[in-house]
Length: 298
Ligand code: SF4
Image 1 (cartoon, protein in one colour):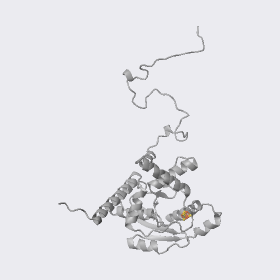
Image 2 (image 1 turned 90 degrees about the vertical axis):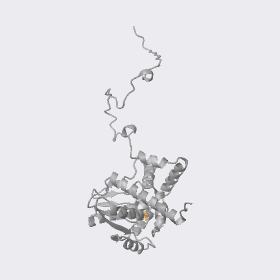
Image 3 (image 1 turned 135 degrees about the vertical axis):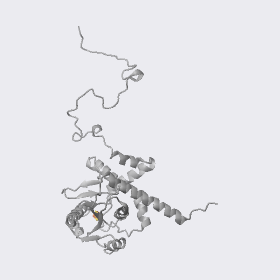
Image 4 (image 1 turned 30 degrees about the vertical axis):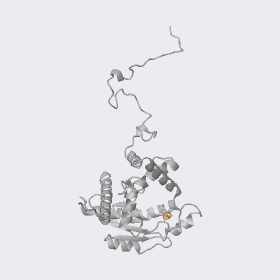
């Protein structure tokens, strides 16, 4: 009789599969976009949420077997939100052996002063955070800045921009910062949020809650999240298809005149795709032409 695997063994196998998948997807994104090169110093932005812990964990894991050698340094910005547990990240980073810097800047007070009561604070707060982190990356000579956004963040941003900004744009896996001095990478770009949630639960990261600032959840993002979840439930695979579609765009089939030169289009007579040579399927086969022309001809 074959022995049944114990619950422990089963969950260990499940965990290994999950870890492998995250590792594989991250490695694939890194390779597809040439995110990390020989000698890079990668500054890993760590907020204390599930995504950034997972990113650091998987990058550390890949670092051990990657064909190129690169350095990891974790950076957290303590924004002085009330109740921010200052010891959690330093304790964790020492335990996993990653060098780190904790920056302190009271952006919380700046945001409170600048944003009228009841208005959403996330826009200005993240702009301030980004500014400080990117400037610090220059200071420490980081060649890449790694952010923990995953596939679902990218798709939510795509729909937010479409629905509220009238633009077809998402969040790229690799990006040059506005200042032109930093290269931002999103190594989790191919990873599903559901996998990250399960992984983070199993790893028991010391999560720092993201609502310390008292800000409400971004309601528009939440509603898009719910919309995508419902679609996926009704049509499994739809999210992956949408994600594939942003990697496979056809500017000539859209309507952006900056992306495709519609104005100077000319008929060349040269087929763009193979054309059937006729027979019963030729374009005019079995077609009756009825013509009426109001202009009488002699
Ligand atoms: S949730 Fe709070 S800390 Fe996070 S971006 Fe919004 S305002 Fe800033």
